[in-house]
Length: 114
Length: 111
Image (tube, rainbow over all chains, first blue to last red):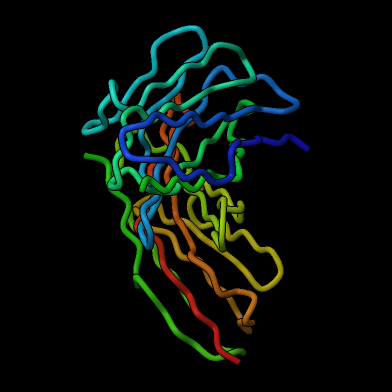
């Protein structure tokens, strides 16, 4: 079946550095992918909609200059957390749709900023 | 503002008990309601509901949607320790694959 892969599964970085997380649809093309963030014991919060070949659409309150999203191909979207700080430590997860109502989630990426 | 609210926030039961998890929503352009189970990583899909009054069933789990009253329930009968997880309700929006997630219900099943 369709699979969405995220990489890395976990990453630790120093405060002030940037971190890139990749989301790939392995056997289908996804014109739209979504990025979510989940803090401990909280629900998934939609951060942005990643559109292939165009700018991402950010949800209210999400800083687009801090969370850079690039959707360069139909199978790859990347989220870059720029100048990361400890409060950015979270579980980041992407999803992609194969069309219709079928949505697949990536495995998620744990980010810890120290 | 679109909103999805789940209750209770947490639930502790013994094996064999039956539980009912609730999800209410206030969303413009409703398309579907989905239930997910999240253990350690990514949510795993349970059900998708689009029509009122039609129960969906998978083993000991079942779910139903009421589009008039804007809520859904997820039932788990004869709970097992393996059912321990966070159960997430999400609403899909028309003309997009965006999901609005609820707060989640943390279920703990003890032997």
